Image 1 (spheres, rainbow, N blue to C red):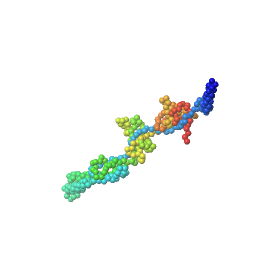
Image 2 (cartoon, helix red, strand yellow):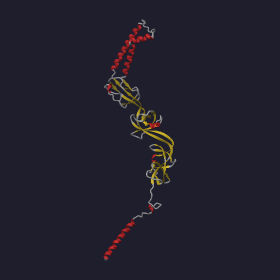
Image 3 (cartoon, one colour):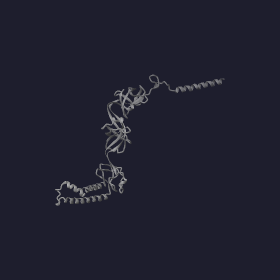
Image 4 (cartoon, rainbow, N blue to C red):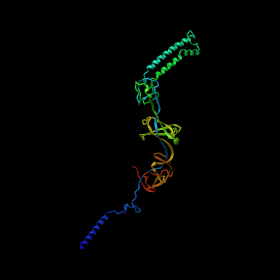
Length: 360
């Protein structure tokens, strides 16, 4: 019996010792370091970044896709059939107006020219014989113009002159020259081949000035005013921006509901004819109250901006106007100079405790 009592006392003593040791190692939950002024758990502020609402010129933007064209271009065709004798150009080569590009074999044309020259001389002799019938002395000064014209027709001189001009024209067409300054593209002609196998000689594009053709919806026609500035960027590099201006508006709506617009561009190494681009038409709105687009959020299906006042985020309903990819116009609900929360506003509520992050 005594042994049982001793064992029980020892057992309870061990339990008490372990429990006391465990409690002494725990940190009190309600320590001063983890209390707020009201005695609850310690609050943590939401760190945010801010920007001031500014009155400035806002640029409304309309984005479109387009294709670059040469400011001037010429397509050259073979106007005279024959065999290609000499090629003097290559794709990508720059040429000037009047430069010789291709020569054809001109042996037949030269023969035709010699024949026409002979026919002309024969007609001149025939003309002189006819006029002698009107004045045997050979003095044609007193012969009337009507008689001379009749003699010209009867002698064949009139036709001979036309045939000579035609032969000269055919010979000239065996030499293909550049009609403009520019660069050679789409050139595939090879020597010793007949001209009949080619659809054209080449194209020449003048890159000293470029233009971009694009379409806008009929509801956006007010954006397309001649002289309006546009920013053009290659699809492959949005960081490159080339400034141009609207030059033409084809004021007719096509079957797809689009209006064709052309903007002129300066010469640039970043754009070449045929390139697909995206462009932005910009319309200036002066004296607009503007905030970063990131500051605008929605609560209860309404547009909301959080304004930082002291250390609190104040929820404000706002009315918005035009917006672009970086900024939005506020038409009501905000004052110039108010500090709006740009980042960190996604999860906060009205009068949330916030702290501004200061960028170094």
